[in-house]
Length: 144
Image 1 (tube, helix red, strand yellow):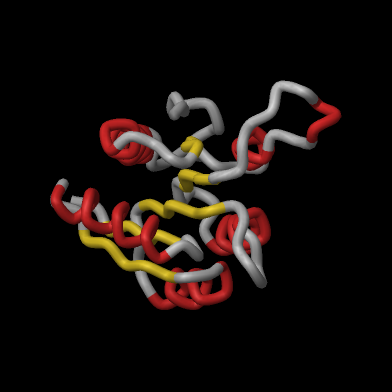
Image 2: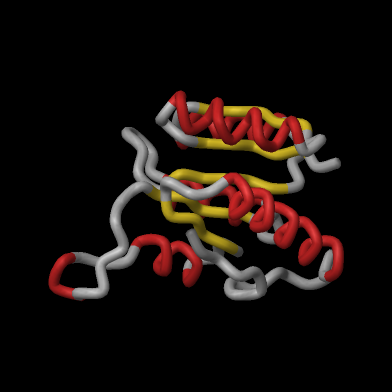
């Protein structure tokens, strides 16, 4: 199966995602923040990243920018626990912003295990199909 890097500052979220993905047969590596994730990413060979947007130190958007500068074809699923607000005055929709900046899919925490597994499978399948062309945001359905 795939080698997946999970970058999230919440240890319970990291552990839960790791267990779900390992049970699905994936090789999983975890990092607790963007800087550590970047170091691990640079040292490893990954098929997919799951990246929290809001973390102390280096946030997920900056981490994603630096990773895409090194490996633009790597599929990234962004995750966030911040509520999505339909009211623009309440603040931006960071999950939508992240997909515009290059994430392939997004998940709003808390998400169901089936939604996570579907997003991962969809990203890996899209990456396989278009290994010679970059995956575009929106190629993979995102949702809760």
